[in-house]
Image (tube, rainbow over all chains, first blue to last red; front, side):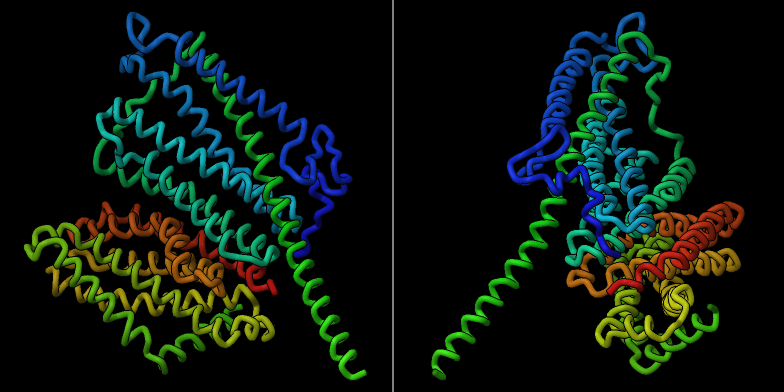
Amino acid sequence: MTPDPTRSSLAGRGAPAGTSGFWRADPSGTGSRGSRVIGTLALVGLAVLALFALVLSPSDAGPNASVNEFGEMVRILYVHVPVAIICFLAFAVTAFASAMVLWRKTEFWDLLAAASAEVGVVFTVLTLITGSLWGHVAWGTWWEWDARLTSTALLLVLFVGYLALRRAITDPQVRARRAAIAGLIAFADVPIVHFSVDWWRSLHQPATITRFDPTIDGIELFTLMLGMVVFLTTYVWLMIHRFRLQYVQARLDDRGLDVALEERRAEASAALATTAGIRQ
Amino acid sequence: MFRDAALVAGKDLRLEWRSRVTTNQVMPFAVLVLVLFAFALDPDRRILVEATPGLFWLAVLFSALLAIQRAFVVESIDGVRDGLRLSGLDPAGIFLGKAAGIAVHLLALELVLGAGVAVFYGAHLGSPVLLVLTCLAATTGLASAGSLYGVLAAGLRVRETILPLLLLPVVAPVLIGATQAFEAGFRGTPADGWRWFGLLAVFALMYTIIGLFAFDPLLEEA
C-alpha cells in the first residue's frame, strides 16, 4: 500500500512553518487552537464532574437508597461507567479504522487505529482499576473471576499485544497492513471471549455482581451523563494529540532517512573529490 | 485451493518427516511439561486428577507455540514466503495448507499427551467420542489462529516473544471450552460437554474464515 499523506488533513501538512489555524497544528507541535479549546473544555468538565459526583449528588444511603445501599462508594460509578464505555468505543474505532486501512490503504486510518488503541488501553486500565476498587467494597475482594472483569482483562492484553506488534514492525506499510489485520482479529475475538467466559463462570456459581440499580434519575442520571460527555471530550482531546504525534513521528522517520542519504552522498562526493585531487 | 493446500501441507509434513523436530524436541517437551506439573502440584493424585483437563490443554498450548514458531521460522530463513508468493498458489490454499500441517502436528502431540495423562495422572477416558471430537475442533481452531498469528509475527526480530503475547489471549476461549469439554468427557457425562464442543466449532470456523481472507493481504507485502 502507499500511504497518502495528503489525506491527513488533520495533521496540518502543507501549512507554512509558524502558522497554525483553528484545526491546523503548528508543524513543530501537536496542539492547535482547536485542540486547546477541547483540552480546556475537558479540564473544566472534569472539575464540574468532580463537583457533581463528589458533592452535589446524594450518596446511596437513607430512604432513597437502592437495594444494595452502597453508600459513598456509589460515586465511583460516575467515573467507572463512562470510562468503561469509552474504552469499548475506542476499540470499536480501532477496528473500524483497521477495516478502512485494508480498504482505502491510507495513512490517516492507520494512524487513527493506532491512536485509538493507545487511548483505549489507557481507558481499559482505568476501567479495571476503578472496577477493582468498586469490587473491593461491593464484594469484599479486589478481583473476582466474573465474566465481565475477565473479558475486560483479556481485552486489555489483546490490545497491549496489538500495540506491541506495532512497535515491533519498522516498515510503515508492512506495519499498517499487519496491524490492521491484528486489530480486526482482536476485536472479532471480543464477543467469543465474552461468551465463553460468561458460560464458564455461570456454570460454576451464580453471577457475583449485584447490579447497580439501573433505574436512576434526577441528579444521579445527570451526573452519569455529564461523566459520559466529559470523558468523551477527554478521549477526543487525547486522540488529537496522539494522532498528530504519530504523524510527526512518521515524518521524522522519513526525514531521518533522507538526511542519512544526503550525508552518505556528501561523504561519497567528498571522497571522490579527494581521490580526484590526489590524481591531479 | 484444496490442491494448493495439500501441496503446502505435504511440503511442511515432509520437512518434519526429514528433520524430526516435532517428534524429537516438541513432544518430549510436552511430556516434560506434564511431569513438571506433577512436581508443582503434589504427587498426590487427587489434585492432579481434578486439574487434568486444564493441565492437558495448557501443555497443548505451550507445545503449540513451539510448533507454530517452527512452522514459520524454517520458512523465513530461506525466504520461502517469497517463493510461495511467486509460485502462484492461492493464498487461501497456502493458509489452509499451513493450518493443516500444524493441525497434524498438534493431533500427534495430543495423542502423546493423552497417553501421558492416562498414565501419569490416571485420567479415566469416560466418553471417548466427546474427547476425540473436542480434540478435533480445538485443534482446528488453534491451528487456524496459530497460522494467522504465525504469519503476522513472521520475520520480526521479536517474533519469539511476541507470538505468545498475541496468540494466547486470542485462544483463551479454546482453553476454556476444551477444558470444560474434557472435564465432562473424563467424568463420563458427555451431555455437559456438547455445548463447549459447539463453542470450539464456532471458534474454529470463525478463524478459518478470517484466515482464508486475511492471508492474501498478509502475503502481499514487500
